[in-house]
Length: 186
Ligand SMILES: [Zn+2]
Ligand SMILES: [Zn+2]
Image (cartoon, rainbow, N blue to C red; front, side, top):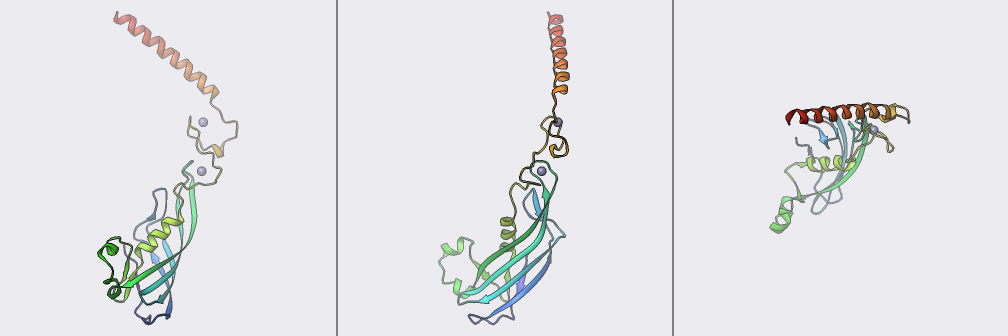
């Protein structure tokens, strides 16, 4: 999925600028495994494009809503994405003066005819705005390691002592059975 911005109305004279607003619907989710702006969701990208000597400077701001799961308890997490980015797109004519090494770093974005391709800056800005470990609450207690219940939903004395006794009774029984089998084998 590419996000092309048509800047043909922007005079290519240093200092000239134009404002643009893009309403984009995502054809694929953007973000991380645990949290992303989903496929079909809209993002709003407000951009100021300014002509500079080397090319076009893009200052953008992305707004959208990311949804995902709490890394501890798997409850839904919603994050308002509001992330800025700055990116310089160079004129190919200027960039040709660059060494191969500089071009190879992939860090150079070029003005393509009338367009600038905002795909990489938008992707990167969304990644930057999202936490690797999203949490429903910074103090989320997570899930009970025994029964998987969401600890926030149960009282703080949630405990498995009783169940533990039952399990130890069972394992004692299993032990006896195994002993019995061993005896039979002899
Ligand atoms: Zn949580
Ligand atoms: Zn439990």
